Structure formats: C-alpha cells, structure tokens
Amino acid sequence: MNNLKLEAVLNKLLSPHLIKDYCPNGLQVEGKAEVKKIVTGVTACQALIDRAIEEKADALVVHHGFFWKGEAAEIRGMKFRRIKALMDNGINLYAYHLPLDVHSELGNNAQLAKLLGFDVLGGLEVDNPKSVAIHGQLEEPLTGEELAARIAMTLHREPLHIGDNAPAEIKTVGWCTGGGQDFIELAAQKGLDAFISGEVSERTTHIARELGIHYFGAGHHATERYGVKALGEWLAQEHQFDVTFIDIDNPV
Image (cartoon, rainbow, N blue to C red; front, side, top):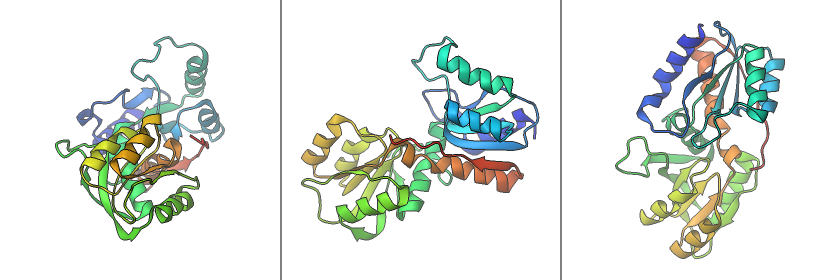
C-alpha cells in the first residue's frame, strides 16, 4: 500500500481531526512510498527504531512519536539520531497519541478494560464525546487487594495501590491509561470506588486518601502496550500487512 494511502486509512479509523492533541497525529516522518512490512510499538525510541531496521520494516507505527508541544524545535542530538536512522532506512513513522487512547475498540482504554474484565459504561467527562478517561463496572466486586493482584498478573507489573479510607469492595471504576492521574478527582466526584492510571503524581496519594477512593498506578508503558498492538493486528487482518509488535520494556 502507498504510504500516504496508509495514513488515510489510519486517519479514517482513528479520526485525529476530532481531537485536540499535544503532537501531530499521522505520518510524522516520510519514508519509502510502498509499505508492506510494519513494526508497531509504544514509543519511537532508538531501541525500537533499531529493531524496525533489523526487521527491514517499511513503516513504524507508535503511540508516542515526535514533535511534542513545548519541545525544542531543533533536530540535533538524540532527535537527530532517531530521525536520521528512520530516513536512512526509508522507514515511515506514523504516530497516534490521544486518538489511540480513546478509540472505542482498539484504544488503550478499551483494551485495558477488556484485559481487566471491566464493562465500559461511557466517558468520565460527560460533556466530551471523546473523553480521554472512561468509567465502568466490574463483572464481580473485588477488594482492593484482589484488583491489585489482577492488575499485576495481567500487566506483569506490580501496581501502586492507595486504599486508605476507600470502600471495602470495588464495584465501579474509572481509568485513563498513561498520564491520566488527575482525573481521579472527577472519578471521586462521580462516586466511583476506584481509579486507575498509568502515572502517579505526589498529590495523587493525598487526593485518594482524602476523597476515599482506591487508586492504582499501573505504569504508563504497561497500560499503553495494548492499543498499538491491537491496531497492528487490525492492519494485518483488514489490510493484509506483515505486522510485528515489538515491546521495548519500560518500568515507568
């Protein structure tokens, strides 16, 4: 498939034009015109780019790409080396940030719900049809310790669990993969029993304790492996691409 046609396919699926984001979504670095082999991964770090080169990929599709709001515009140092490696090898870089978080089937939030056995009820931000955080309910109530164990077993990473003053049983839960910790107050306002995000801030512990809600910090990378992996599987199934998901582990 032509590289610009692939971008059009991804844009039609993920609708980035409907979401205000912190970076450009779509084709960020142009490579060879014809795409057959695709590597997917969470972040376009040098290690993932090197693996894509080894795989002789024509394209790299990631959740965290380049050109973030507020970052230096100069292409030098680490940024230069990454972009040069892509361009020297003709690898197209496609990145989808918030559009891949919020997609109702392939998104990070939807995939996390599927893995953890949550029934999705809707967006946490009622007036936002593209709410970054969502909420739902457990199929069966769990204690905080039981949900922490489920998260650890599923994501292969021990979560941070703050459960002081929280309900004995968890029936309702809100979540936002990655850096969504500040949605915890909205989750508490809505009367949810628990909130899960990838990252945690110093203030999050105090908020959870004082508002009486369970909080689980499950890791930014750990909670965001699954959207881009599902996207790659969709590309393989719907458009017959040769796709390989490569996980460059990150403890944060």
